[in-house]
Length: 266
Image (cartoon, rainbow, N blue to C red; front, side, top):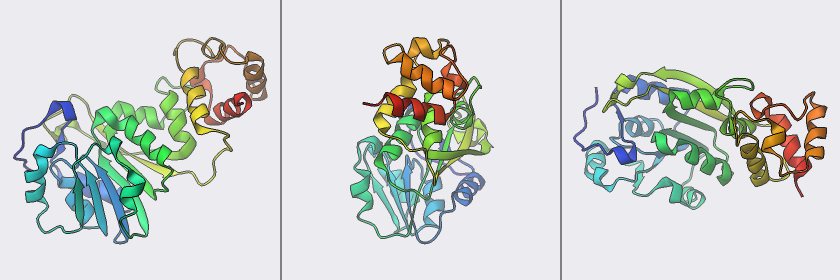
């Protein structure tokens, strides 16, 4: 079991893994190899970073907490293929940063701070960077939301957005007891493989807006949530898929939202 000589900061969502068997399984699931550049966010105490570095050509890790510099330096002695950038990942110029490296395959593998899970995924999507695989440890309830399908309680706007771009798969469960300090929730490792074929989309930003507006009020139907748009167009699209304006967003799959977005886009 890994031990850490740090003061954990709740504001940064710091809960460090302590079981090396779990990080080995994460890296195995990711498919990282010796020709890979791996992006990691929140290396913390470097337990995952070290395992990644032992398989990858290079690891580029972003850490917001500069107080961890000594711990990371100590834990990463001898790992000359790891670069730590002390910066908020959400403020980084990721395209510029990775342009400094030579690699064949690109991966994102991270036990991300839970409070920025969705912003990180949206940043990766909007970067349009072709990752070979994205593997993240997330809060179990969030993992359920990412990987569910239409008709479930967990299905929401982020589910639709992610499933447009990725095949989302829950890989394995991780108990809260595997972290220090122990968080209030269990976790799950989720993988995101970019879809080779996507529905044609006129404008992603507008698609995102339509999806979020459709789920704006969870218990209201599409007619109420999209009333500021041309409801005749909305109705015609829904009828094409066998629905009417009384349907709720939680019952519509990705293709319907793509059709709505394209039809309403001007």
